[in-house]
Length: 313
Length: 289
Image 1: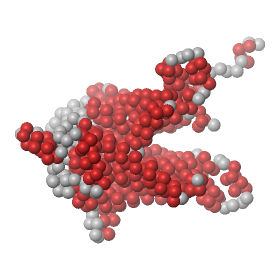
Image 2 (image 1 turned 30 degrees about the horizontal axis):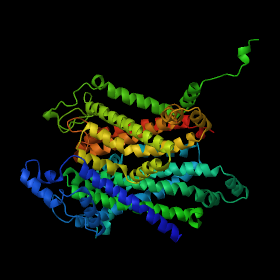
Image 3 (image 1 turned 135 degrees about the horizontal axis):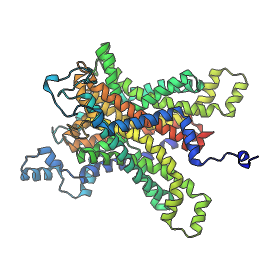
Image 4 (image 1 turned 180 degrees about the vertical axis):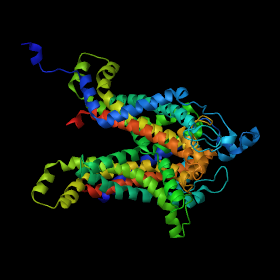
């Protein structure tokens, strides 16, 4: 198992490097001058040239690239081009909000999605199955930010149960949780739709296998058959694809943070984008890439846990 | 007796596909909805009686009534007309981006799968890296640097979806390549491009079409997300995403500004998803048992 973990860890290095490199190149190679963007359209040519020199944009690309990587490895994310405050501080302020949001959403997706998938699979072509399938298709079709708006309309404006916007106070758990529920539900329900749909088809696949019939023939309780025999092997595809969706969820978390006016990496990134703050942008992307690597790694680990074939290989 | 009445009824492949499709209720609903959405967008000037850009300061945020079915927005513009016209942007971006991504991805996947060796390795590792990253974020970065605009949007979303196509086409090419008729073609000296074009591509086209229709749904969703963030087509051109964005400050007093464009996205994306699911059931023989 240790070897398996080490192997996965080594494999995630090229992915991290690859994405960081792509981000670096996109920012440098595509048209648009970061120095010009930082100073505005009316800045004098001299001022732009001076800033370019200061930002190191006149150095050859490989030199810039090596500097970018070494800074990143030392944990130095640079300074914002717009506010000139250290980017690390701003990320440290925003990161907890994004982490709690995505983590809760993945949890909601798994806790709701897997049982719904199992239930609809065991009731194939009956009413609960149809309802479940229609709802999960709707969940797959609705953009996260629109679902967020609908939830705000219902729970914040109509019923006035929960606050609509903001991230709450991190040091006050009650305030923090009340601000977390709606956005986490938004992302979580989007996730639930995918997980439920996949769990259903994975379960259907397994339920038609001979060993499930044998287990039933032995007279085992249906619940035992479902959970100990069927779900256990159905979990393998569920885990691997849930990881893929969790990565996709990061994209949706950006729009969700905007709808709920929550502090977070996504909101910070869009702000950086609209102001063309390229240094902040590439640092945030690097953090997101770290996120992706961690999610993939976690998926691999759970995968090894649910699939003994991988563990023992 | 007439011999023909005893002969087994022969139906063509196309007829068989059509019959299976028409029996699939969800797929038919998807097809009808898709045609409806395309028709409404194409015939926008005939369906929307008001100009989507006509402002009227006196009628700001007026709730829906008989003439203005979905109410008026912050500039007094007709929300119904705007929703109808906005469909054009979403559909054009969604379809064009998937065509672009589909063509790029298919070429990459075909070349990688057929040539093998170093070329295959290089292409597929690159695809792996792109796939490992949330596509929306990559699209955001590309758009942030390129700036907003219809063509840039199509380019960014097309790039986002091409690695997915490449991966699927690569896998499909590998399995078709191993079959005897490809070997036979190679034996009679057919050129590589001819084999790819006439022997391999037609056999994996079904899979590409299914993906294309499912991913058109995703592309429309992505377009809406990008417009919502403020990186889409520039105003005053209405898109569903920027309409929702403009409506969010008025959720308490004028919820129709956001609710109706969102509904339009939901219906459109649902239509393409249903259609894609239906096509998959029909075109993927593995699922037919």
